[in-house]
Structure formats: structure tokens, C-alpha cells
Length: 191
Image (cartoon, rainbow, N blue to C red):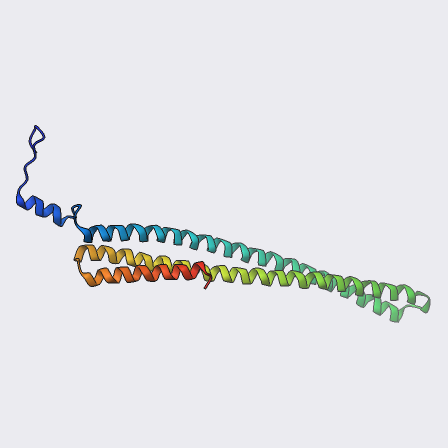
């Protein structure tokens, strides 16, 4: 380029610009567009994978909390059972005049234990539900991770296709990208 803005380039300059991916090179443009789209879809899949992993962790935490609450209820149940057993022993050893008192205590502990058992079983069921929800989220997370990984491979194939200009690598790139999107759809459908 001269000082006055006049540009002269030789025939080899034109060929170099064309080989480097000038505006008219449809192969390069196609690869660039594919890479941009797949990278965007991959970023969305990556986000979804992170979100489902976080949800799985929260559900697993909720399951542990419910399991602990259920354990506390079962310990309370055991304490009432111990008191009931002591009342039954006292009934055997006490004079007949105290028998009604101990029988009432035994019945009270039986009723309390029945209520505690219902609560403990409900908490265990909730814990199991949270565990199942966590497992479902982890399955979905794995699908998102698989889809993201396959899309990353497609992007790598796009770079190889651009460098080698091999048509079969381009087909492999498109096929891998399509496979990644299909796996992402499976993740979205919880399959």
C-alpha cells in the first residue's frame, strides 16, 4: 500500500487471500457457521448439565435430611418401647392396687409408638422419593454431559476439516454434531 491509499497486489496475493478464507469460500464459511452454532448449543447443554447436577445434589441433601429425621423418630420409638417394657415389668412386679396405673401407661406408650411409627415411615418414604429424584437428575446430567462431549468432538472435527479440507472429515463433523444434538434431545426428554 502506498502513502496515498492506492493498493496494488500481485496475483499470488489474491490466491493467498482466497486460500486463507476470503468471503467467497463457502467451505470455510460453512465450517465457521457450523462451529458457531454447535458451540452455542454446546454451551446451552453444558449449562443444563450443571443445573441438573446441582438439582441432583439438592435432592440428595433433602433425602439425607429426611433420613436423619426418620432415624430420630425411630430412636424416639425405641425410647417409648423401652418405657413400655419397663411398665410391663412393673405390672408384673407391682401390687394389684397399682395394676391399673401400669396398664394405662402401657396403653399410652403403645398409642404414642403407633403415632411415631407413622411419622417415621412417612419420613422414610420422603427420603426415598428424594433419592429417586436425585437419581433421575443425575441420569439427565449424564445425558447432558454426553451431548456436550460429543459436540466438543464435532467442533474438533470442524477444525480438522478446515485444516485438511477433507470431505469425509466434514461429513464426520456434521454426523457427530447431529449425534450430539440427538443426545441433547434425549436429555431434554429425560430418556
